[in-house]
Length: 557
Ligand code: SRM
Ligand code: SF4
Image 1 (tube, helix red, strand yellow):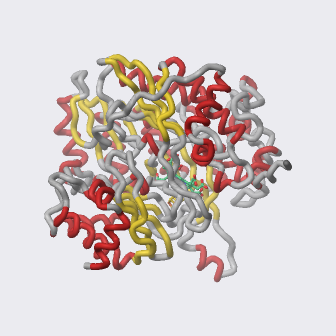
Image 2: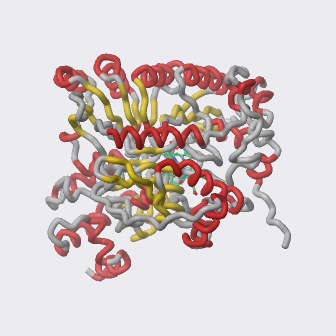
Image 3: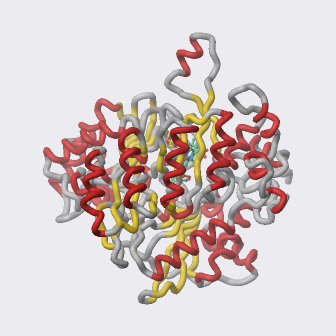
């Protein structure tokens, strides 16, 4: 049997000499962009070449080509940032980017609008503050996500330590990042090859998240590997691994689809790094490299079945793995509001709409951090936790936030506070339609509609997530309601996901114009209100009735 042809990206990786390509040479030329496959390699360095899609047509009409800028994604394991690091991130957004920071759905920070000449100074500054964009993107293990709640407990500290250990243990080793962006400083001390990844790296991106027992705030089932701690009283006893999740799909590519992972094994904490490395090796060696649409590990796990996949992992480890313990989920907490940490200090979780820190909101957060906040944590819902606050500072901090128009979570409508949207236009090259720019209006229209039907209470307010294309960056398929860009001004509506992240939503209607979205949703909510069980949520209701049946019933009425 002949080996399948490698995709273009595979060929670029193979000939790149561990991600060097000719980035260095192109950095020195006078263009505002990178070509010849270097644009693809840049992703492994945490950099995306972009253009302002709002002006693309006008520039074309004027006979001009694209005006390129770059997005830089900074990997922040577990979303944890010291005050000094946060303030540096903020400072760099003014000096080298477009004056804003974007908290991502994986606890990272993105800069947009960085020009080519700004790449090196920005990455150098990050390095000086022990931050990096290395492997925040690309076919490697991405930023490790972990439940960010800073409650004081030995187990929480230990889980975060495991997340950091995994982050270090799975970073690419080759020195190209340091040679290109940091003028070779440190590069001489680093390896020239990749012991884990090899010269082709992984077939596709690979995502890992640590949940906290019973709290699925990280959406563990949507990850390549979800890590769920098992406790014995207050002691961390083991980790259960959920394997083979992923959300991306394409409307036009057959058989691509979101998938939730399968619990595969429960292992002793000290076995975690080697077991995840073995999973990575199976995907590295057996994942498809001919067609990137089918290269995610979820398709390998699906094709083999979790039992056979586990056998392959055992072969790499040379030992058998125990069965997984049963999992129980009680919440998918957003950790917003005031909390006592358990060490005499407080933390305050603040809602940042779609993760966009800009204008006065950014200024207010910066001043709060300067004056009152030793540590910041970013959440997988694009929000921010201000940690280790002295109780005596609570009133002054609240007053400062109010001056900058930053609302406390209890004053925000629950449906708004639980909403997420991806960046989409104008920066995302894959966007079909609006998401982040459309969501604030749409979600407030939903809020008004829910209030009209007395369905706005926190206990039942729906979790709604929107994306500008089917790739799923704001995890719409694991929300109760997903709004997924389908056409220039239309969305597919997904219903029936669980607020605990344990069930996928299904397509309810495929091509709903923006203009009729609220009336379409209203019909579903009226049906829900009339027929729901006591304290039943919309996601559970749609799943119980069946999304197809619901559609039938509503078109009949
Ligand atoms: Fe994503 C590609 C933004 C989380 C699935 N994602 C992109 C790119 C880089 C577009 C591109 O390739 O040119 C987007 C950049 C837009 C911009 O202008 O900033 C982008 N993804 C994001 C972020 C910023 C969305 C957000 O609202 O925060 C998230 C960054 C996370 C991070 O810090 O690493 C982000 N992306 C996700 C998630 C959710 C998650 O990981 O929890 C998913 C679904 C889960 C998954 O991976 O299956 C996701 N992004 C994708 C995909 C589809 C992958 C697939 O398997 O098919 C693409 C396209 C691709 O890889 O080809 C993509
Ligand atoms: Fe871009 Fe699509 Fe991801 Fe939104 S979901 S950021 S439109 S790739």
